[in-house]
Amino acid sequence: MSRRSTRNTLQERNENAPEQNKPQRKRKGECNRRVPSAAKKQHYEIQVSEVYTLHRETFYLAQDIFDRFMLTQKDTGKDQLQLIGITSLFIASKIEEIYPPKLQEFAYVTDGACNEEEILAKELVILKALKWELCPETVISWLKLYSQVDSLKDDANFLIPQFSQETYIQITQLLDLCILDINCLDYQYGVLAAAAFCHFTSFEAVHKVSGLTWDSISSCVRWMNPFARAVREWPRPQLKDFKKVTAEGRHNIQTHVDYLAMLSEAHDRQQDSLDRMSPLAVAGILTPPKSTEKPANA
Image (cartoon, rainbow, N blue to C red):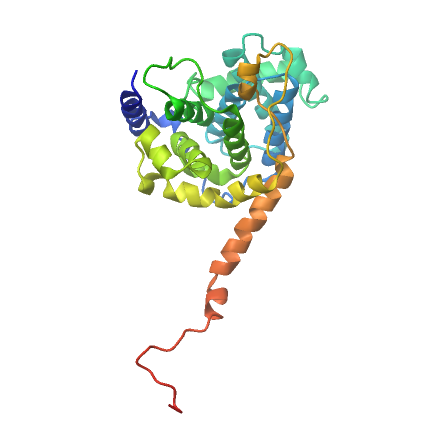
């Protein structure tokens, strides 16, 4: 498959993505960032994913399941978030992992907050609410496609990863951080992945591999700016070794850093930008006289 034909296929998939693969807008009245309990829940699941050597695709599928389920609910107590989150990860693991952790292990990592019976009962509730639609293209699957197409040579095997693992895990770290903020739901998965890819490559590379225009990703790229700056100020992520994982597959395992601290820095940057753009800040800027207006003592 040539790079051009692959790009055309990806562009068609972006344009024709089914509705269940597109994150919906935030519910009316929802705050502009994930509530702390939800962000902590996701951060915790990143930790669990690394402990059990789960793939990135598993974690991102779990987040998709969680977000889509939450959008079907009117009122969900904070005490239910952990149960919904761990059940989403349980479902995703059974879909993506060859040897998923056992049910009792998912119950164990909640430290007694959720038992096996509760997880199984919530699993059925989630599956019914989502009408068993469990195989979307996730943010991470779009990123992997873009990365592969960008590095693809005409005579290369498309199924064998050709891209830099080091660059890939930098981009995934940015996406890991961004999904902790509820505003990520304003963007389609393909656009989120393209914007993150743009921050570590260029728009020319994004357009080449996806066919997306600047108008279609510029808003997301700008929204992602404070997150990208926060990621760059932290130590560069390193590839980790995992038992029973080949060197060629290390980049596919979900890894953890202190994303909550990184998120706080990104939000501080967002607030600084908003403060600079506020009417009060603008009013304090002196407007220079027109070139035709001479000073009174001239």
